[in-house]
Image (cartoon, rainbow, N blue to C red; front, top):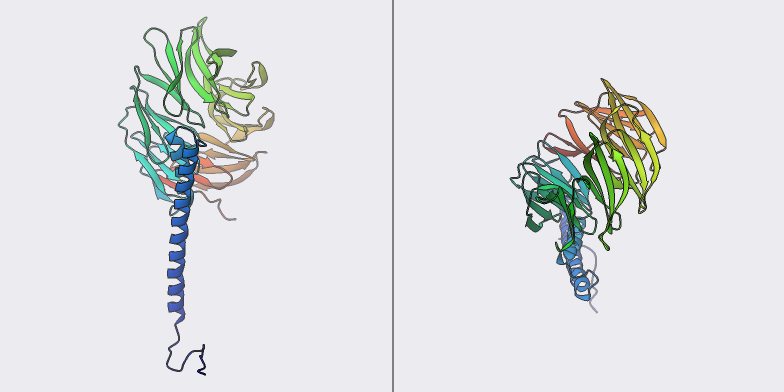
Length: 401
């Protein structure tokens, strides 16, 4: 019987370490491609099944949202920094696994891993945007056109009858639009995720014109803070609209102009005016309030948990005020001159002309960093700090001690 040897013969040449490493890397690339291809096919098949069985529903756009989320997770980018091409940042809004960055000439969408997902050159004279969980609306405040965008493509482009004042997007894709109304003061329209009109309200001068809007976490209600003139001063009427019934309910009447409006829970609504912050019960009535005591509001930031950071000013002096979601004061003290404030849990960040400073909720300074270009925006969450300055987005690393 012939004996088969499993060892190396004398004529065999040993593989070099470099050759072995090269072959292993090649095998790893093949395995990665196979895994990625299989995962993508599985995601597409799942989307088709969900859509066909009605789990996703009748909206094709919801299926596209699902596929976008899978693509972002399975096809990561090359990391940061990235030249986004937006040199004058006017707005940055988070989306699921990504963000949209707006400049004077259009906007770009990037995944949080640094992959460019979309780029829009709108040509709008006064562009603005509002974002939900998986999509956003880009609209022209000097015209009547709006674009509803997913993270990767255009979903709808719509010409309104009159000039657009304001838009808001719900997490489920509902869209609220405020336009001029020739026969009244303003018109509020609400569309579902398929751009089918579900509500229309012609608002009189007594009702006011909405300057801030926010959908509830379940996307079933819309809060609108509308400004009107009464007795020679500006007043804000705060309305709550149940989209199922369509009847607006007035829950507050407040002097001043709304600067920020949002939901901190399914039953509480937060409104920041130019003189005070108020926490409302969704059924009506003030739950708590914080007064600015004569200081001027410079900036406001509310994190995902409802914690608040206020940047107040009085002459050349600046003050930071930290409030929890029930408006209890966590910190109030003088800070260096700053242009913006960002709240992220137990920390807050101050953006100045020359850099960024990080402090704890008790006001203790953690670190500061001087930058080559003026910081224009900061996305802060549990994963990372993403800083926007010049035309560059980069991860901001705290300086090493």
